[in-house]
Image (cartoon, rainbow, N blue to C red):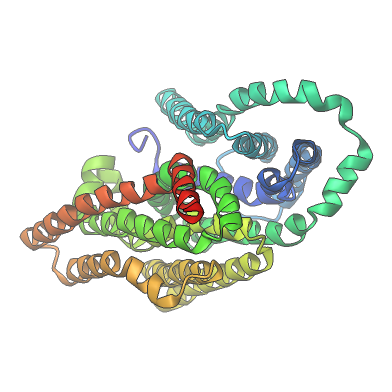
Length: 459
C-alpha cells in the first residue's frame, strides 16, 4: 500500500483511526467485557443488548460532535468535515458491534469463529485499501478500507448470535437490562477509563505528531505502528480470547500464578528478540520493502520496535486484570502509561524536535510497558524473583541487540549481520519453547492437567 499512498495520506487516515479508536472505548461503556464473566447466559444476553443500545446513541452523536469541533481543530484530513464526520460515525458503530459480538462468541467458546473473522478483517481491509489505492482515491480509500476491514467479521458473528437471540428475546425486559447495568457498573465506572487511557496512549503519538509537526511524520509513525502491531493483532488477540476463559477457570483451581509465569515467559521469548532484530534491520529493509519515498521512516520503525515487544507482552497480560476484576488497578496503570508516554514525547520534542520526540516517546514506552507487565504479574500473586527469571534471557538478548545496533555505525553492515544471525538463532529456539508453553495453557491441556492432579489427590 505504500506504493499507492503517500505518507501524508497515511497520516490523515491514522488521525481517523485514532479518533474512532478513542471513541469506541466509551461507545459501549465497556459492558461487553462482562459478557464472559456473567454467571448465567440470560445475564450475558442482557450484557449484549445493553451495549448495543448505548452504541446506537453514541456513534451518531460522535459524528455530530466532530462536525461541530472541526471548526476549531486544525487537522489535515483531506476530506470535507461532513464526509469525515459521517465516516467517523459508521466506523465507531462497526468497531463497537464487532467488539460486543466477539465477546459473546468467546463466552460460547467459539474461539475458532472469532479467529476466522480476524483473518477476514485483515484480508478484506487490506484488499479494499489496495483496490482503492489503484483507483487513486487517496485518504478516502484508506479510511473506507479500514471500515470495510472492521465490518468484515460482523456479519459472521451476527449470524451466530442471531440463533441465540431468537431463543432468548422473549425474556428480554427493561428491568433486566437495568439490573445488568447496575450489577456490572464497575466496568463503565473504572474499565472505561482504563480502556480509554490505553487507546489514548496508543493514538496520542499519531495525533500529537500531526498537531505539533506534520501529517507526514504522523504517516511515518502510522506505518511503523501498523507494521509492528500486526503480530500483536494476530497473536496477542488470539491468545487473549481463550485466555480470559482459562483464567476464570484457573481462579477456581488457584493456578493463576502458575499460568501467569508460563504466559509471561512464552510472550517474552516470542517478542523481545524478534522486535530487536527488526530494530537492527530497519535501516536496510524499510527502503526496499516500502519504497524510496518511505526511507525516512526507517528511523521511526527502529525506535518503535524498541518498545513494541514490551507492548506485545503487556497487552495479553491485561486480560489478567479483567479476570481478577481489578478495574481500579488497571485504570491506575493505564493512567501512568499515558502520562509517562505523552510526557516523554513532549519532553523529547522540547529538547530535540521530531527525532527527540521519537526517542523520548520510545524510552518512556519501553519503561511503561515493562512496568505494566511486572505489576500485572505481581497482582496475580507471582513473586518478583519468578518474574525476573521468566524474562531474563529474552531481555538479555534484546538489550545486547539494541546496544550493538545503535552503537555500530551505519557503514558496518557485517557487524549488524552477525548480531541478527545470533539473535535469529536464539529466537527460533525460543519460539519452539514458547509454543510448547502456550500449548500447555490450552483448554484441552489444562483439562488433562486438572484430571491428572485430581487423580493424584484421590490416590
